[in-house]
Image (cartoon, rainbow, N blue to C red; front, side):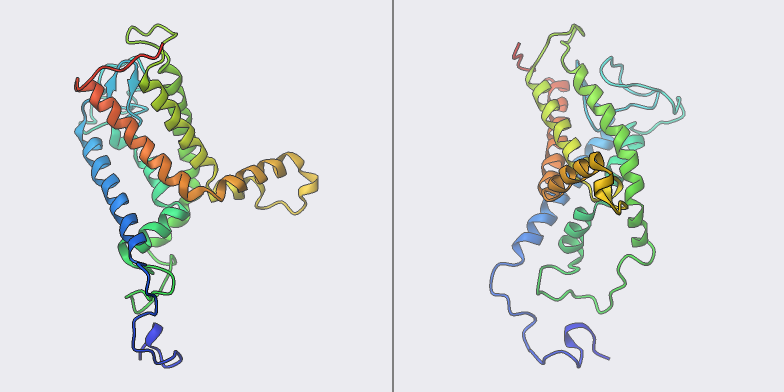
Length: 264
């Protein structure tokens, strides 16, 4: 039996769709952007090198939880995994922020459309003959997004601590501010804005309240998060780009491409 747009209940239109604009441009650009980040982050996560340049530490490697971490005084360095962990220490911690983004409502929409064409665009039929949504494995695991939100909070706090330490110079004396400090500040600001604009955060703050009048503080917080939530897509992309640029900047400093310009 024919299904979807070709089912007997639908109008007999020969064209696959009636859109005449460049509808494919948006999903193609989304797929290209996400693929570029996946390639870059995979390379850097497995590199296991050049992630520390005093006083900066790459956000991909903080906190460092293995004994094979580069010696560093910037950022948390807790060898909880001991010396048995022989792979890159980034693989221990990146699972949490990446899991948070992978299960994010916006990112799900983005890569469903960009990579799976489900659907590729509004008013454009998807090529799949059946739709099961997120009710079966593995997509049912998307429902653990709120738990990844809880895990992303301490990671954001640790990156905030790293940013505070970025106000030291290469000798770990306070009062320094370089270009790297500015990059770290912008990055952590965008990470926090993306994190708190999450749909799960909005639901946790005010999703189960029946009477906002009885909870004025939570109502104010809910309203603030709701305004941020309207910009969740922009914040998702901005924070994704900023975290990659922060890591790239530390990599360029660590490999000696240039020195960190000091602002004061």
